[in-house]
Image 1 (cartoon, rainbow, N blue to C red):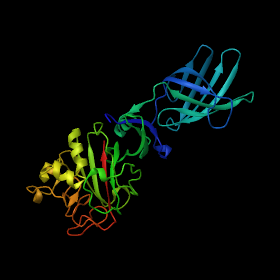
Image 2 (cartoon, rainbow, N blue to C red):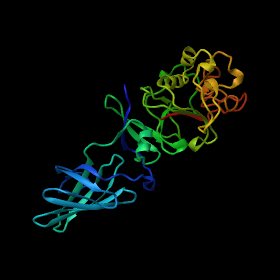
Image 3 (cartoon, rainbow, N blue to C red):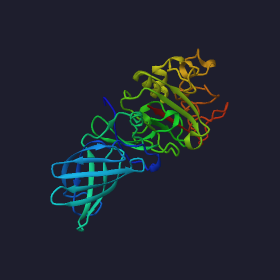
Image 4 (cartoon, rainbow, N blue to C red):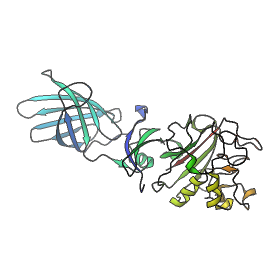
Amino acid sequence: MKKLALTISSLLAANIATAQELPIAGDYVLTTDAILNGVVESGSSQDISITGDKEHFYADTASQFMSGSTAQKGNVINFKLSDKTPSNTQYFVGNVDVQGTYSGTWFAANGNQGDWTLSPVQPTVATSCNDILASGLSQGDGVYDLYDASGEVVSMYCDMTTDGGGWTLVGSYPKNEPGGKSSINQYGDIPETDPNNVTKLWLFKGDLGVFSDVREQVSCASANCGGGYNVYGVNFTTSELELVRYTWGYNERVDFMHMRTDKPDCTKSLAPGAEVIPGCVSPKYASMVNTHTLVGWQNDVHADYCWVARGTYATGSKGSGQCVNRVEPNGTQWALLWMR
């Protein structure tokens, strides 16, 4: 897969109050039918070029005139479409999805009614959650549809608020999962879509070229990785991101990064001037070869026994490390891997 294309359509149930304002001007296709059942069936379509802004927009075609406005930060729309001759007006009301497509119902004074959609001629497309955030089209944290190079849809979770937002969840280690994962191929292919209730052992195995930053969270004990520990990498190359992913399998961790400091460096925060930790490992282990006994990128940089999960040692220990010296995982913590 050469590139991960993330379209701005989503399955999330975000609060409408968090929605960003959407631009309205542009070229659209208006499709209407004459059956009011919530679905546009056997409708007729026409091209419309809208000008103006969310407070007042309009369009003028050869035979009709459109005028309307939006409310609720651009989420709700109402407009009227009037024939120039003979006089006839249709009234439209509806809302917008995160791809910028409006839909709803229409009615006229003569009793006619039906459903409609107003779709952008060229739907906005982004290559990452971060692109959506930067474009002002984020609908907050939630699950978005991602399309790979083959056109298959994968629903993945986007964190649009933490650490500047724009993070895609690319890996998860559940609290009830025993240790001992030798390869990233042992992780499932079904994405985890709830970082606050992790149930899937999963890693995204596609191309990482659309990302440049990475965040690993371990010892998560409650919502928003409460009680957990983060490490970060910024402006990483694709190869560095791949190495971080490989640390989640103990054989690949050792095969590709012989010394512990061969792992990509990390920081404990995104604050300017944050200390760079070579190999994302505690200084007391910096001169040692890598080990099969654990998996994950960070190795005791915050506390002892602080990593994603166990490897060849104590393989029955479940979940992520507790980050307490000489205390093994006990099935109460989980780990997450994010990229943007």
